[in-house]
Amino acid sequence: MFERLAAALFGGTQGSAAGSADAPLVAELIEAIVEAVEPRIRHRARYQQKLDACVRLAIAHLREMARVPLEPITLTRRAWSSDPHVNAFFATADDVPECLGRSRELRAFFADPVNREVAEAFGLLAMRRTERTVFAPQLQGDTVRHDVPQVTVSFSDHRLIAPGATPAATRVEVGRRIMQRLAQVALGRIIAVDMKATELQERKAYLGARLRMLKLAADGMESLVSDPATVAQQIKETERELESTVEGYIDAKASLATLDGYIDHVHAVFGHPEQHVQLVATPLRVTRLGVKVEDDAAGPVNDLTLTELAIGAEFKAVIALVRCPRSELPPEVSRLAQGERYL
Image 1 (cartoon, rainbow, N blue to C red):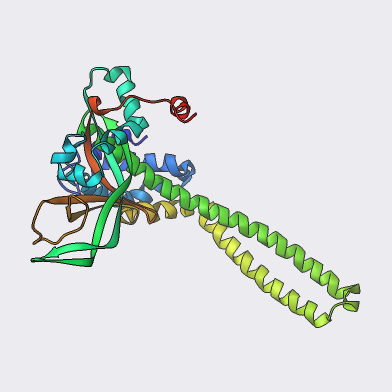
Image 2 (cartoon, rainbow, N blue to C red):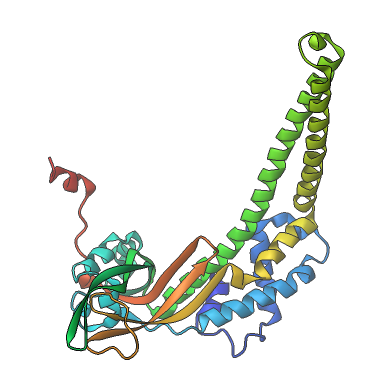
């Protein structure tokens, strides 16, 4: 659904300016969003016009992301010794082919008969960056100081996705997944409101039953064993909670059940795409042991420019466009064979 749109935005033909989004592209993206999030939006008159502004904002943001330079980094054992990014990203040279071997998408790409003669693939490498403060010896002038606080930078949870025969193919696939992510966020907001409405409906039914029970208790034999004033107070508290629950339920249903409510949720996401997906370039200088150093540090240092991808508040990763030679892919070992080694 988003493939052609991703090719237009991320495939090298995204135009010269963020504001140059043409009408056919806007219209097509609106239809793709509506189809993915809530097709019933099409029943709302002039829905295209209502979504036009926010979709243009999303296109402008995606085009800016597409312009972020990502030069391919070759992932090989040998590159670990010579390439500062590979050296920083992996603890040892053997970790490089191990990372390639864990990618099911990369294995599937090379196993595809269409790619039988392809010697290398490109992909997106994503990693988690962790910084820790440690105390270690450090040479300062002619003196070795002990227990000097130092910040170490490490990378873990390596994942390689979106393999393609060319860098452009990988960028397009990543762009498609980013657009799907935005649609997923919008749909998630609708589902969350629906779940809230369901919970409030259940709570409303419970409180209604409790209120009827308390009123029966106040007028019945309950006064023989309970203070009528206590029962009356419980009735007032239950009535207040029920009133508040009913108001919340009405608001939740109003924001969800109308076509304008669906459109509002799409607006909230695609009108503010930078809040949901963002690329940030960050300079970093570390030693070959992963210790962060200042600009004036002497000795061998890895000068890096990290590209960090943030997707919502829950996901943030360092990403890199990588070249993956077929020759570096280790043979696949079955889980059964691995288990037999320990028997």
